[in-house]
Length: 297
Image (cartoon, rainbow, N blue to C red; front, side):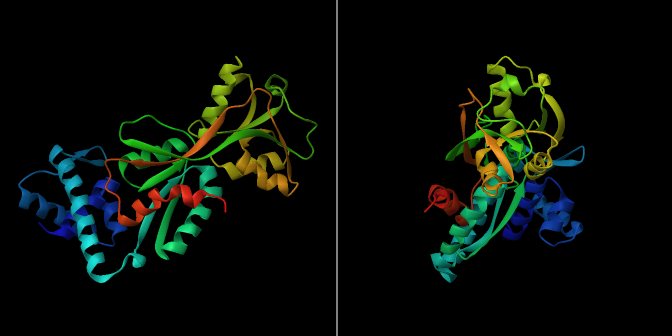
């Protein structure tokens, strides 16, 4: 069994697409297809079913994928043992992160990790917490960092950092001091999309206060946390966001921060990984050292 064919096979699995896999590993689509066909002939099994626009693994393909990851990792370990020392670890770590971790946590963690492993490179994708969990589940990233837990037997969560949410307003706002949520219902609100961890926490708080979400005067939804802050800076509305994200703007006297009475819920940011995905040595080292990487010295 050809290890290169197995490598190509794992890329098709991760991307669920022959064309995207070909683009990722700089081969033509026809070459990728030839490798998969040769692998199927060697094993005398079908590895993929075509369902709609996606290539879905057959049961035999699922079993081969797990073995392929182990064999490729073993190959990397053998080459490392022969050619390099542990300090020469190199490779790409693929991370998916929700808005706040992507802006405020990962840069610090990457900086610390690269002092130990300077040949590590990173590919970082930023999206909603729900999308982060989905990317970890489908294996397109090595792990994720997010602010909401989604139950799935394949997902393992490591709590990294605890924080809470605050109300932010422009400097022109007439809102003062700690506020009651009932007194904010007439103010224009800027909200994150429903897949964000911040939005999930807000909805749980509103439910405890017997307030329906449509009672809020929502004037805009945005996919991006930085865009949301810009709406508030322009005095278009108010918003509830991560204190970590708000603190930078508050310290520069660009906006105001207010505590919300009764909103005492704290949340964790988690590192999440798929226990069925075989990690590269570099990714495994990052996961194992995550607590030290996020610590403030």
